[in-house]
Length: 247
Image 1: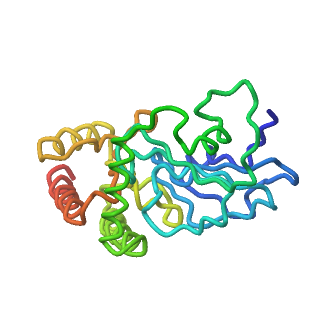
Image 2: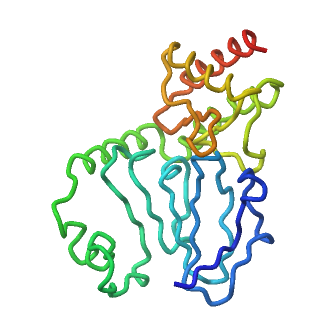
């Protein structure tokens, strides 16, 4: 297909989310696609861009259900369940029905959205346990007070961690302030050796998976819906002690 990149953040090391003026969206395109939250670099879109009338297709795998979303602004929202919705093995698609077209012959059956819609998502045996877990998570979110409350909780957790990073001369956050993710907080220590030591000592302190993505290294704290505020407090207290020890 004729793929046109509307924006490439490589020049600024993927630290920013582009403004509307920075997006080069051509007239008459079939659709515009983006990933709403970059788990590797720790950036998140904080606005819905104007796509000049083209259907807007968005991967929300890592921030869906973290805050309210106006679904009417999107043509397609798709997401893996394994971040905020439940367990791996389930994909969720929210699609405007007028965008469901007869599928071409050269795509896998699981990508045939018309087939999935016609068969009520049961063309094949559905992943029952993953669907059941999603139901429990949605019920839990309702019990918390819904997505407005989840938004408040996630912003509070992220603020605690970012506020500490911003006042520290030891740690350096990767993403710029207006582009920061509430789900994935990425940062580094003064050296790669200390990054590795941080991960090692964090494991000894009872924390897991704080090592940054292999393509960028550093440190990444994923603070999805399931992470309580107390977990972020524990991390920040550990970071303070690590900084005092190694600064």
